[in-house]
Image 1 (tube, rainbow, N blue to C red):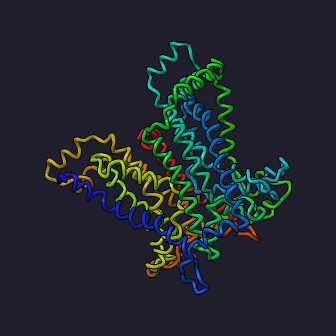
Image 2 (cartoon, rainbow, N blue to C red; image 1 turned 60 degrees about the vertical axis):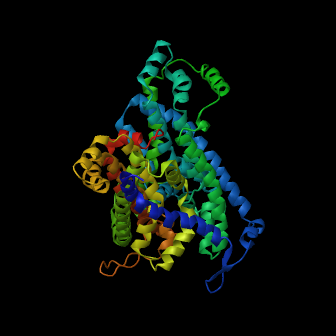
Image 3 (cartoon, one colour; image 1 turned 90 degrees about the vertical axis):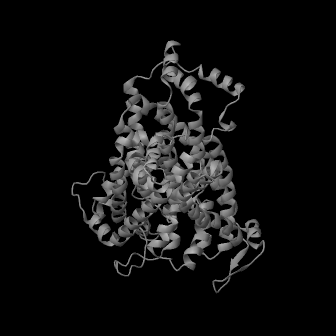
Length: 572
């Protein structure tokens, strides 16, 4: 091994150690746990295939699996159907403000998004029920709406990235041939961005298959088990003490996720799966040629854009309007749309009662951000510049990226329990990078692909080794890529729900000298929601407060949005 390769290995070593402890071991640990069951004393004993046999006699497994498949099929294809015209609108308008507003739902905590829709669709006091007279809480489509609202912006972003990357010569050739508007989109643009379409579809499938937050938020409002999927059901089994059975459910999810991850990696790495057969291409061209060869009038484009914006922004506007109403106005029928007597009492309550949770979220998000940046970016640089680990390491990172975080729930709980870190900041700071670090490495890997080589070469000529050159020269010059990684790292950590539910059980003690308790603001929002008595005003105010850090960060990054999608695009 060359000396430079050894230094590259040293850069990647912390990330590799982390993956070995916190991802490889949990994957193996789930298999071991699936053959065990918990006794009345809490001890785990060997149970053979008992937990696997339980699937056959579980009266709810069939419904739960059916719900999972339903989400997996409906959400991605609705996403794609809506993302294609939205991406075309974003390209046609070329408005950064519109792009920023469209992206906002993708960067707010999932639990906040679910709460916003819970207040909008509520069958007692929600505006949608009052005006449409349809109770969405009686149908599984409510979860589909919430999932689409969360995932559609990123799907549209991937397609928009593809449309923006179409070479000028292709655009000019279409113009010379007289192909424009809708016909050009169908006949020229979509075939060119097929890799983006496939990647968007696979990611939407993964996102929808393992839905958690919307189901958690709506459990007290819907018929029992009516919308539960495998992810939430495994969480339920864990908290009822059926750890072995929960592990079996997680293994089923792991198999499903592995298949989808394989498809994702094949698409991302440019494998045969994203190359349509000539016969398929010919049929598509024949179909596309039947679309009208005309440009949609600009006023119509903006009208459709306005409809999209209403869909994206109305839930957030509604929770703000709810948050400044008095309690009497919140429960008034017909619903009060805009109060004439705004009140900040709910915000005062949400801040005073939620301060320990806010502090926990901030400490955790900042801690995770620092860890993932300082071990993720060096690893990404070594992998990108020196091909450290080859395709195998990159594929494993992408594989972990596509796994749902709940897959790691049980073994990580066992690790944190053995280290006596349950209900501490460290339990969250050490485990969150499981689902944050792969994102940071992937984004940074793409960034360093285009980083000038002469920078690190000059640093080494000056006598620096590769590690020193990276931290003293390269990292400070990587602010565009680092800021993008910081944005994703902070926002993902800020809104996490599953790990705080599993690894914490009390709020921060507000004693920095002897800190104890680490429940985050996502837990506070869930507690405000409750299952018996819902304080809608405080719930709305807490949800609005949870939007503030992501909104500020997204605004600060507005001038980097184009760099963001190019760094994280399909052609890494």
